[in-house]
Length: 452
Ligand SMILES: *[C@@H]1O[C@H](CO)[C@@H](O)[C@H](O)[C@H]1NC(C)=O
Ligand SMILES: *[C@@H]1O[C@H](CO)[C@@H](O)[C@H](O)[C@H]1NC(C)=O
Image (cartoon, rainbow, N blue to C red; front, side):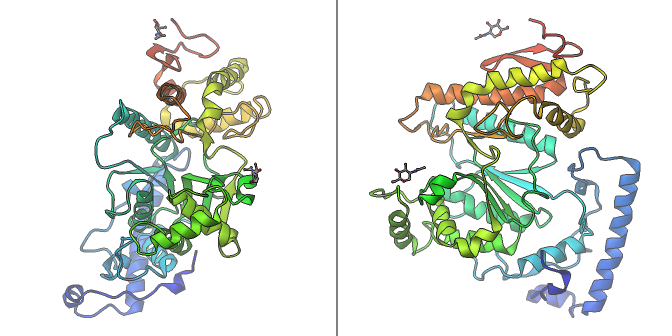
């Protein structure tokens, strides 16, 4: 992040300038901001004093006295030239790191040691789904994201609009991710998650401040395919972007390859010709564009990009759905074996204490259930995300490699698997992964089996 000193002067529109007659001198603006920040800091301290915040990530902001239209210091939002729009913006958004920093400071939110705030962005098309039960499946995948976000103190933005008429389908994610960055200067990260990606480990927290420190883009990938210049080298159904100028520039560059720009056809030829497994195809998608951008500009972009391979930031569903019963059984066995009162894993608890129990469960299964936390090709750990690539639940037009039945059963199994992790805090679980009947959990479950 850039330092405060880089804060760029703002242009103020004619009417605002008239209303305030003269722009405040910088010193007096800074003093106002300081006085305001001190007030906010006192409010935060009072809040912290009256309630401890387990898990850390639970948003405090909702309780802060937010400045309103009349008393808020001016920020980049007051600049009429600044645009949310990835396509039609008249001017490139520059100096974002300083602008964001100035906004945070003006709201007293410069909490350097606080958890990094995340906004998850997902979405689907504006119209109803054509596929059988498509809207029901989208509802369930949305519920699954709501659950994960509630447990982890993440805000969820679900978008159903094409922000530009030409940026439809898979290209639609670029404009909304960009707009989300501008709308959420409070968020350090924007986390795009496709609608057909299902959280299957409600315990795993992203290693943002450790593993991804100093990185601006994170996606799951396959190094051998990257070496082969394959369009499948990374999967961009799930990716993280730090809310910073670097990411805005990447989004701008990526967007310019899309169908809203005149260069689109030229880019299609270049990209489809350069990637080794797109030969003969005319299907130019956003993932090919992003893979091309990263691979062919690695010297420029690679330093800030992180290709995750250690755990399933995104797993291919066919590798996962057949293992879920076995994974659940292994986690249960660990909890059953835990001596009551020693690890305390089986203690009932309020949902807001989830992250502490998640950490304890993680410690208990580590080394006992093989594989990395977040899941991997080897072992039996829960995969963080199972991605139903090619299933197209909304259109119902799945890849001919798969049957509708295998896709639907796979999604239901993954959603049921995740649902049981959530329902546990409410005292219930499903009769089976594909069974919608629920049973009450006895005290000290799973040491005592659930009743029939
Ligand atoms: C890489 O490309 C070669 C040659 O086309 C192919 O034989 C090999 O299977 C590819 N490897 C991967 C991991 O895709
Ligand atoms: C679901 O579980 C309930 C309760 O165990 C059982 O009665 C029912 O037959 C199961 N349904 C299916 C479709 O397996």
